[in-house]
Image 1 (spheres, rainbow, N blue to C red):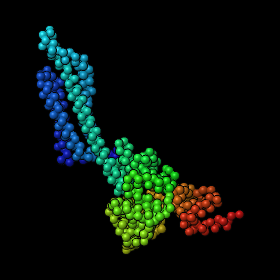
Image 2 (cartoon, one colour):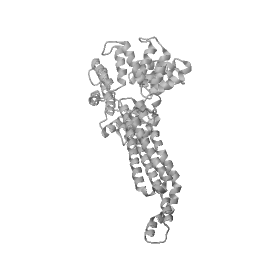
Image 3 (cartoon, rainbow, N blue to C red):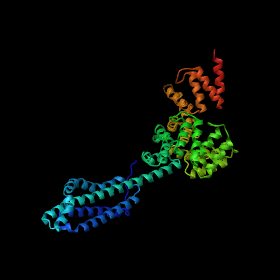
Image 4 (cartoon, rainbow, N blue to C red):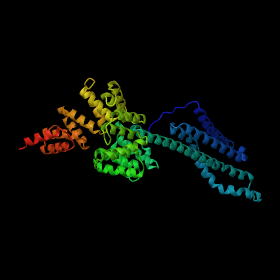
Length: 490
C-alpha cells in the first residue's frame, strides 16, 4: 500500500490518550493481581468486571480514533496489540501448569464442604494457581479484541482508499487510481476493485503504466465485471500486450454494456461506430451513443461529444459547441478536455486565438501526463510554431507521450529519430509500434524505411505493402511513393 504520513490534530490526541490510558489501566490491574494475588483473590469478580469495562473503553476509544484518522498508519494500532500479545505468550506456561490442577480446582471446594480431609491451605494454593489461567483468558480476549480492531482499522482504511481510487479513475486520474487502489485491490472480495485497478494500470501515464500486469489482472475477470471487459477492449484497441483487434474490442465493449450501463464503454463503442473500427461505420449511431453517455454527466462522454461537434462526426460541425463541451468536460474533471481547450485557444478554433492561454492549458494538461497534450507540445516545439524551435524539448515530449503507446507520438518520435543515422533503428521500432495500431502516417513512414533501407534492410515488397495500406487509409502522399516503386521495378 502507498505510504502515508500521520498528522494528529488537537481533537484526535485526547482520543488516543483515552485509549492509551485504558490500556495502561488494564496492564496495572493485571500487574496488581500478579503481585498481590492472595490479597485480592476474593475480589476476582470485581477484577474481571473492572478489566472488562477497561477493555470496552479501550475498544471504543481506539475504534473512535481509527474512524477519525482515515490516513493513520495501521502500525500505530497494531502496536497497541503488542503488550497483551506479549502478556499472553508469557502466560502460556502458567496456563499449562494451571490446566494440570484444573480438575482438582473444580472438586476441591466440594470435597472441603463434604468433610473430606483436604487442608484448606492446599486448596487455596490450588485456587491461586488457577489465577494465571484466568489472566491468560483475559489477556487472550484483549489481544484478540485489539487484533480485530486493528484489522477493522486496516480494512476501513483500505476500503476508503479503494473508493477514492475508483473516484480518481472516473475523473480520469489513472495514476492516482493506481496509487490508491494498489495491490490490495487484488485481495478485495469484490472483483470490481481489481478490475478498476487493472484498467488504471493500462491507462495510467508514466511509471504507473503497466500493460503486462494490467492484462494479467483483467483477463480472468472479463466474464465477471464490466470494467474488466472495458479494460481488455482498450488493450485490443491499442495493441497493448494483446493483438490489435478492433473487432474483438467492439465485442468486449458490447459485453461491458450488457453487464451495466457503463458510460465509458458506451463512448468508446460510439467512437468505433464513428470511425468504422471493428464494425461498419455508422456516424449517426456513434454520435447517439456518445450523446447518451454525455447526458449522464460523464466527463469522457462530454469530451467526445465536443469532438463530434468539432469534427462533424455524425452531426454538423460546430466549433463553438465543441468548445462549450470541452469546458463542461473540464469542469467534470476530464484532463483530456484541457488538451482540447488548449488546442482551441492556441489555434483559434471556436474561440478568439490566444496562444498564451493555449500554451498554458496545454502545459497544464501535459503536467497531468495527458499524452495528446505532450504530443502536441512536441509538435509545437519541433515546428517552432509560435515558440522558438527546440528539437531536444520536442523529443522529450514525444518520448513522454510514447510511454503510453500513443501512436501519434510514436510516429513523430520515430520520424525525428530517423533523421539521425545513429538512432535510425530506434526510430524504425517506434514506427513499427505505431503501425501496429494502424496509424496511417506511421505505416507510410515505415514504407519509406523499407524502400530506402533506413533503420532496417531494404525490402521493396514490404515497402509497397506499407504504401498501399497507407493509401487505403487516406494518406495522400502514399500514391506518389507507390508510383516511384513501380517505376523502379525491373
